[in-house]
Length: 219
Length: 219
Picture 1 (tube, chains in turn brown, blue):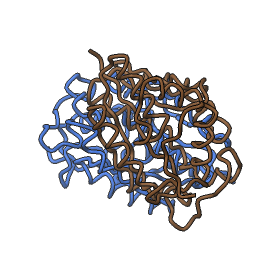
Picture 2 (cartoon, helix red, strand yellow; picture 1 turned 180 degrees about the vertical axis):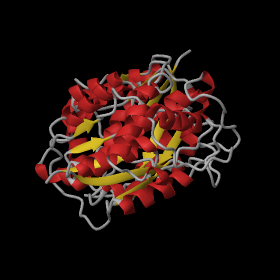
Picture 3 (cartoon, rainbow over the protein chains, first blue to last red; picture 1 turned 30 degrees about the horizontal axis):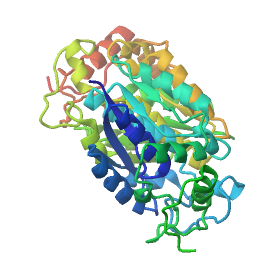
């Protein structure tokens, strides 16, 4: 059976993606990326989720790229994490430059090493406004590049690109995904802060989805 | 003036590329990638060349990705470097999986950090047969992805994609590039071995170009 490398952050989107592929009977290999994010808690979450699904999990260590990334709130401790709604302009400070191309490139390397036939990632429509590299046309271009990068074709799967986060939470509930194991908060404390952009978005998605939110928020 | 991030290996192609952009009066920022290559001598060469051209030079450290790359001759000491002609099938062992997408992704991150307007890389027609990610259509797809990866458009320049190595050496001679500073050999000794694929290709290119080869070969 052909393998798929799933880019797995430990958040809701990529966890539901992983669960969906497992439910379809696919052979899945999860890849998380350590790019020095201050919310390192998400890597622990990713590990626990892969253990739950009994899926192999690898962490690509890109921490040495910090000098390339420059100043941004996710990797640089000196830049404050913005509070408020996820789609606001202030959230741009959370962008790791060219993150999705990097993640997909590393996943492509792993896919070639493992002779996998695809890479899957969980970009969804709610991301488009703030992250240019979550737009469908970006994914289309990278899909084409990935198919051409090796003699053996690898495709880029992005089943959620037309979905919003509410739909993803509903799909997670339908698939009985242990969403309490996922991690969203960008601040990186012991509990979800409840106030940063991703926490606000997470709370809202559960509410709109009509799914009980299992998350313990600090406030 | 707008900046360009040049992917610079310390070899002939990327050095002539760098020299060409400098000669055009462009503001250039060089990026080398340390992916654990056994021919680490090329990083030293890259540094010397950037000093010669007084161009800022940064090394992206991807050595921690070794577990992702798996077994190949460039990064794994247990795999022998093949001898013979560069375009032969045996050279496939020298491929770092998805290398060009990775290099371009990292260069894209740096370009965004520096607010540069392009990334340039030196893929040429002689590479196409052996490296799928040196093909023009691969570059076209990644150019499109790079333009979409940020709100601020970044283009992928690849002026040598239709050139062969002979033409590149001739261009280097015309621009009085200190080609003796460049490094090609994959074996990674003190001198160019003269027998590995890139040494064979290097010798041949100087000969066909009618340019005196300044390289000292071990055999």
